[in-house]
Length: 261
Image 1 (cartoon, rainbow, N blue to C red):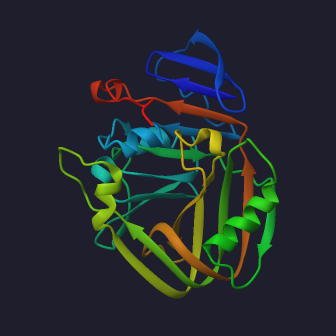
Image 2 (image 1 turned 180 degrees about the horizontal axis):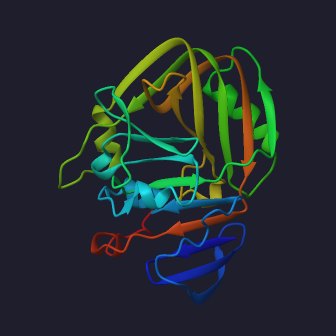
């Protein structure tokens, strides 16, 4: 099930395999988190396509997103760093390599969180790269049209990660904004990775791959994971059959052509 919320309305969509077939509208109380404290739900602000098109102005705060989950990822106003949500703490990894806790009033243009409840876990073999990790996680999930949240705790022979640079208006598309991203590789590190897998039919909503952000054990650095080599670790999985999307209410969002290929 997908719920789409704005400040005034909540819509519940019954989803087919590749298209939305039925829309049922109902009034909700403004400002009340529909999925707050509801596990097995991913709550997301905005959409991947909006972010790709350069909608980087944040209207949802970290404090508001914290009502919906304790694990997740995203970015910040103006692409000012990567968001890594671990154990209810919203970490911000910036282009200069710094890592800090984002204050509750910090705004986000795109984020997804969930109340993480372990449904399944598996020990990770030594020597997996990113493609190998994705393959073993996908095999464990099996054929599925349901999004999955993941947390990985372990040590890594190497891990390559990135953070974007802050963007000024007029905002470029995401692919251009990431051209000057900072990229680092660290070796023999203990890390926590968090993120999501979305099925292909939700590709306009979120990334249809194993999308992972990471912080080190001592919480001194982190970012978006580009590649890795495992040493030892455990992956915990949480299937999330309900997806709540909170849509921006800005004029910029309303004028985006999200149906464009």
